[in-house]
Length: 75
Image 1 (tube, helix red, strand yellow):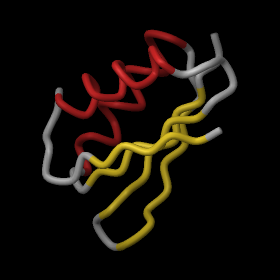
Image 2 (spheres, helix red, strand yellow; image 1 turned 90 degrees about the vertical axis):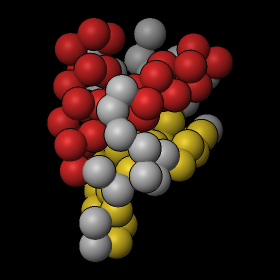
Image 3 (cartoon, helix red, strand yellow; image 1 turned 45 degrees about the horizontal axis):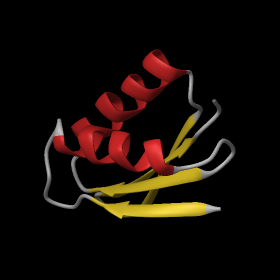
């Protein structure tokens, strides 16, 4: 199951905080998609969840200047 959060216009640490809250509610194997328009969020969000939890992350540019960060809850 996929869950979606839009954080357009929000700068770090807000996307990380919102993703943390959402991931706490997800079950193992579910995916969170975070949509952002801040390129700095790509590195900070993926780095946070890979380093802290070991969650696989994938980044897709869905429109020019808009990215979706997919975070898979593993444990």
